[in-house]
Image (cartoon, rainbow, N blue to C red; front, top):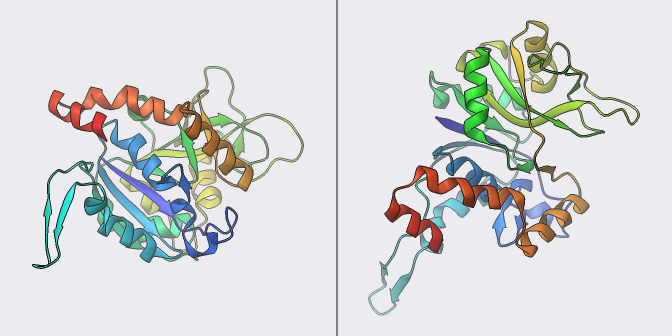
Length: 278
């Protein structure tokens, strides 16, 4: 299964030099947001990624171009201008970077990568939140629902894509772009499992995913919601970033503890040892 990550925004909100890098490359600890998200999928055996690049896509390309070198022990022989790698601690990731333009909507970006997705069920995330959501359970829930799309539903005020979800109900019957006031509803958490046919719902590259696509799917009874009551934190503001940073530095980052707990279920004993070293 493949995971699509949307990476089009800039990081101007988070630091003085944030305008020089994409938002998804802003670091939590020593690793960019993108790495944390990819780790959360990888611990469930999803290692094929399609990254929709927009703002400063060269920063993301250079990160992966140097990833192997930066995560290995190496000897440089300057006289001969040669290099010898002694160990390989990199993850088994296949990463496809597609320049889908920073001005494209989420729907438009998905439309542009249709040929890369193929004809299988795939995951997708906005790339602007960290969570300890169980991806394996999310995929199983999606398959049992038998609908075109599944999103994770989280309880959070003040965000777009809000909806009511009655007890024991799994279908999203209607969505609102925004809710005024303090009423606590379920909202779109930005992690999805999708069928490839969903791309046919996207008429053109101007399609607004959260409005035309998701509202259309909910109206047709083709959108299910997986309730997630665990950790979920967006990185929309500098304060959000500081909260995530403090959790990481304290050693109690829920999204990382979840990765450590679950990743070994998908690895051989020798791979487990390598993962521990990393």
